[in-house]
Amino acid sequence: MFEPNGDHPTAVASYDDEGISAAIAWCRKHMQEGDTLTVWTSQKSNLRNCPQLEQLVNRDSNVRRTSARGGAHVHGHGPVLMAWADMDDISELVHSARHRIRALCVITYNEDKLRPWVLAAHPTILGDGSAWEDSTPGLDPLVVEALKDMTKGVTYNTIAARGHEKNVVVGALLALHDAGVSLNGDAMQAWALTHGWSGKNPQHLRDYVSAINNGKRPRIEHVLRPDYVDLLRQRVAEHA
Image: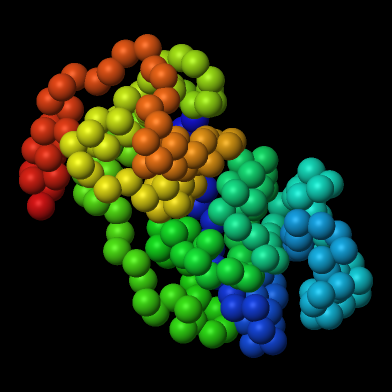
């Protein structure tokens, strides 16, 4: 489940002429000799909604397009410009092409869906940055410590299947919930996405949080020690 963090720079751009122009320029700035700029959209037809991107793809020989429906292939090494992506899209693309992405820029269409990622990834802000001025509070320090434990305690396997990985993640979530600690699934998904969690595991983490917040208790084979949250509090105090 854990992979080393990619060292590529990130950016987020507003969906307006200024933001799109800045996104293209930012991606070009991060290109090296022989690189390809990959433009991602969820469907190929989406490019028709943005003449600037459509022109970029059609006229530049070192620019290629890809879409989620086509498997989201990154063409060679180089920067990736994701137009109108959400956190699930980012997670899947980064997992499939982590070592080919030189830089990643996301053009937003719904700030609320991207806000947790922006808060976690600290990308360069391009274009109109007013949407990011009112930031929501970060994760509870207890949650961050638990996320670090989850990251250490699992492998590359999916946390959706029965086994050790699911026990580690769900056990920690239930312990936090039972102790009255607030769990924000979107923010936790963003943390996992920016700390190397692989595949769909960031989404699975969010889904577990949503289920627990709605009163469900996903089945696991063992629970954590009863003083687990107290140990988290001690660690937070030591780091303060």
